[in-house]
Amino acid sequence: MSTRIRELIVTPIAFSDPPLLNSGGVHEPLALRVILQLVLEDGTVGLGESTGGETRLERLEIAARTVVGMDVFDSTAVSAAIDTALLPTVPSSHERGWTTSAVEVACLDAQGRLLGRPVSDLLGGRVRDAVPFAAYLFYKWAEHPALDGRSAIGDDWPEALDPAGIVEQARLMQQRYGFTSFKLKGGVFPPDEEIAAIRALAEAFPGQPLRLDPNTAWTVQTSGYVARQLDGVLEYLEDPTAGIPGMAEVAKDSPLPLATNMCVVAWEHLKPAVEQHAVQVLLTDHHYWGGLRRTRELAAVCEAFGIALSMHSNSHLGISLAAMTHVAAAIPNLDHSCDTHYPWNSADDVIVPGALEIKDGEVRVPTGPGLGVELDHDALGRLHRRYLDSGVRGRDDTGYMRRFQPEYELRLPRW
Ligand SMILES: O=C([O-])C(=O)C[C@H](O)[C@@H](O)C(=O)[O-]
Ligand SMILES: [Mg+2]
Image (cartoon, rainbow, N blue to C red; front, top):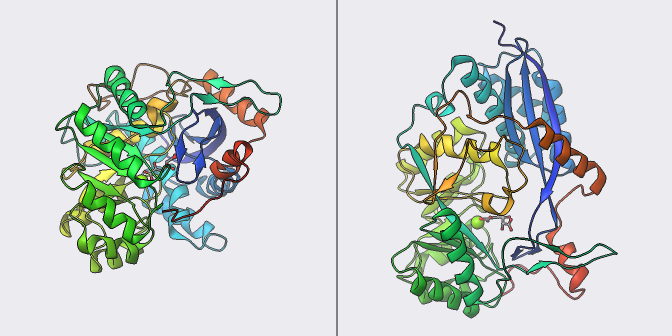
């Protein structure tokens, strides 16, 4: 049995995304991802998934040329080789992390398939059989409006532009998936309107954990105001303002723990964040922290410094959900339920249905070899064709918003 890497197949895809609002605009009808197939000399294939867009795709193509001939069990060396190949053109370790992470997941999937063991076993074994996830609530339009001769594009989720709409969306999330904790993506409306939405959720779902994430839409002063208003209502407030010093300033007087997936996104951010007491909860994300093993290590660092652990998500499909589930299963100090966009995007997936299901707000950890999911090659071909035909090559929430509201500007902080 040869465990050498013969080829890394990199396939960009485009899949449907509803008109979800955030502090930077609104999601476009298509979101991009890249699917990796790491083929070993013996024919074993490991799967990976990463964010899309031309720049990240080019880096994955560099990685594909770098890893040929390496041993799949040498995944530390594989990551180091990719990192070295990218270093001259990609100075940010966070940015390089997006590439190494996706390949590491594919290596672990292949290793698990070779050994007949689930990826969670390669990470030390699972400490839970099911991983809890939080519903990701978004303000949203009823449909993507008609544009440039294209008809409007509807979806399964009603408009949500006020507290009643958000509560209805949360009820649907609970009915369809059984979620028992909720995260509202804020930074869309003036803070008092979002405070009202959180209060409406607290009334509708008494005792169930709530979070609010305005993605740095607020000043330090506004962040402090919201934290005081929602004291005792939120489990944590996520990225209210930008940067480690800004978060540290808010944290000084905040009665609520502050969480981030924006100001601590690389290893070199940990020291200043700890020194300045900037964050009390870290949302880890294996897609940019170097992969699943590094995420496991990050959890240990957080434990050492008394930082609680949660998990971030972006628009993603089933290979990522499987990877998130395996690593979350292997982390003892997972203090909060994980985020996932999956309900918004799962209608278009590249995996064979049935392996992963969100039920009672949880995903059962796959116990088959590797990630425990199989690629649906027809679906992959369809979504790749959609990528090619669409001409979409990056994410532009602000530009898309301006198609409908030409006066819209990206302003952070806005309030
Ligand atoms: O927790 C977060 O910051 C996110 O989920 C970031 C994402 O970009 C989300 O805001 C989105 O997709 O609109
Ligand atoms: Mg966030």
